[in-house]
Each structure stands twice: as structure tokens, then as C-alpha cells.
Image (cartoon, rainbow, N blue to C red; front, side, top):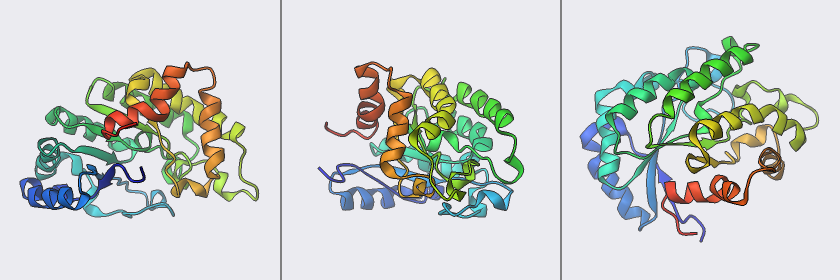
Length: 244
């Protein structure tokens, strides 16, 4: 079934006033609305607003997770049987922790492994940034209502140069570059809380659709059938309440 589950948008900064908006979306979804996604990605550096940006440096996104009305809006999702997809950059992850503490009943899905950056002031600091990101992810793993979308590595802001090459990389090279991040997510959250994502068409900046999935398959080639089922299907089915 195509579009069996829909993740839409509502301005959660409306707080409790977002309720009629959610009700209208649920009605329009005809039983298929599963959650709300909100772009909270913000950084001081203009370099992070790359070609894949949808909400380029909207000042409202700065520390949005800490906004009291926004937190009330997120709380409304649980009351309406909806999940929350969060998109932010890795320096903002401590703000997500505050949101999770105050919204333990809301199912939260962190997009793109928490927003890796490798451009502007983050360029040439991959090892340092990896360590900082991993520390944040270790803290986030303590929140049982949080799941991770594993992907989004093809965005230019991640700092790999794949999008600048005359010929795109093969799946072997992608797997080598992305493996450390994917293995950290699976180590900390388990396959039951991780789901692969294509992030297409945005990740097309760096590679073709089948090449991306072949990279994931290379990384998980020694996993059990049950572990693969969770990563490629079952976690997403649970998170978005889909029949498979």
C-alpha cells in the first residue's frame, strides 16, 4: 500500500493552540496520519544552510526545543496518538534531551542520526565532532521513547566531498565512510530503536538510490535475519504503526 503512513507538518510552537490544526490534519489524512515532523535545524554558520536546506536559518528554529509553547505542542502529539519527527544539527542535541525529559509520553524519531556537520567551522574536525556527537547520542539512548532514523549522510553539509566528484562513489566507499556512525547508533540504541532511511531525493547529491542501500547492506552483511528485519522494516513499522 503506497503512503500507508503520512508524517505531516504543523507549527508546534502554537502550543496548545495547535490542537485544531492536528485535528484537521488527522481528518485530512483519512486514517493515515502518523506523526508531525518539525525542522529545528539551526546553526550560526551560513555554510550549514546548503543546497539540501528546506528551512534556511529560520531564526525561530534557534533553541526551539526549549520553547515552552513548542514543548506544549509536542505534548499534544501524544494525546492525539501521533509521533514527533525531530530534525536538528548535532550541537543542538542537548536541547532535545530537555524536550524528551518533559515529553516522556511522546514517541520521538530523531532524523538523520542527529545532524552530522562537516562544513564551515566544522570542516576538518571529523574525529573531534564524531566524539562529541557520540557522547550526545550516548546520553540520548537513556530515553526509551526515542528512536533513530539512520541515514541522511549524503547531504553536502555532512562534509564528505561525494557531491563534488566527476563520478559518484561506489557503495564500498560509502559503507566505509558511514559505518562508524551507523555502528554507534546500533550499539547505543539497538536494532529495535534504529531504522534505515534513504533521505531521497536529498541524498541524491552524493549517490544513486540503489548505491545508498547497497552501502547499508554492506555494513549489515553479517547481521542476523532478525536484526536486518528490524533495521530495514520492523522498527519503522512499529514507530509509524504500519501493517507489514
